[in-house]
Amino acid sequence: GSESNCLQIARSNFSSSENPARGINFQQYPRHGESQFGPSCVLASWLLVGRPYPLTDVMNDGEIISDRFDSYYSVMKRSTENQNHRRCLPHEQPDFDEITVLSNRQVLPRFLIYFTESVEDFIENSPVLVPLEWRDASVLILWVDDKPDPERENVCQQILKTDPDVFVLELNSWDLTLEWLERHAITCNLAAKTRIVSSQCREGDDLVGENIVLRIKSDRRFKMIPILIYCGNKVPVAHLHDSSQKIFISDNLKDLLEFAKSQPKTPVDQH
Image (cartoon, rainbow, N blue to C red; front, side, top):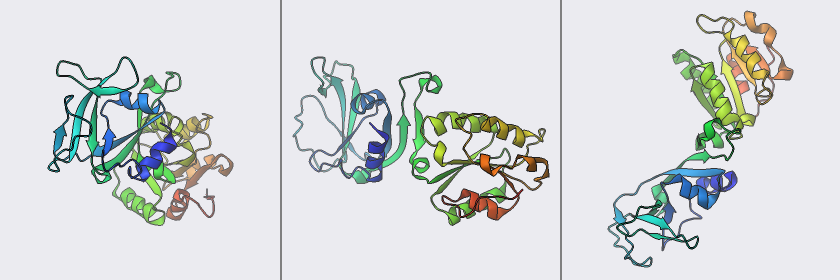
């Protein structure tokens, strides 16, 4: 259904959906969930099914299942006459399945999946998975670097200690970063919380920092996403610094930590 409804269910861990008599129902067929809840957003969860009990068409819905089982499983058929559905007969091809767990303690909400009806609005009209950590974070830091760096891991830990509501996503190329911006920042409404951190350059291309900043800022969809070029030698890119355009250049760890905060006290203004 709507993003807000999915988030409310996820954050309550389905407590409002729990029915002690009938449990909580899930499907593995996305199109059935989409038909029930609309095309915009679907919540995907991990389930601990334990020992499932197979329900068949000959059973009554009110039939009590032995407490030796932890969940129920059915294959379902849509009715051609109305909006109801029923369990499949042995010779029938199912339209979807249904998994019923008996407690919300068997559920771990994990992803929001976004759908669209327009190819133009979305890359190849495919669904996008958004981990709940991204949605719940107050700030999403895209840290772009193509080389593993133990020091960067230490810095990321310091960022999380400074503000635990920040989520750092490490990406190893600018191509991957641009793809992420296309698929998530806009389609899934994450642009307002997104910030980008990168080093000045890459091997074989000293101007990559400058080129990519100009490329992002020339796109009206991304132009207000803050960018910090965090590098040891900031002289070659110092001219890019423009706080009005949210472009910052620094070699100071304190600036980086302040840039990553959900509510920075002062803007990074060193160049």
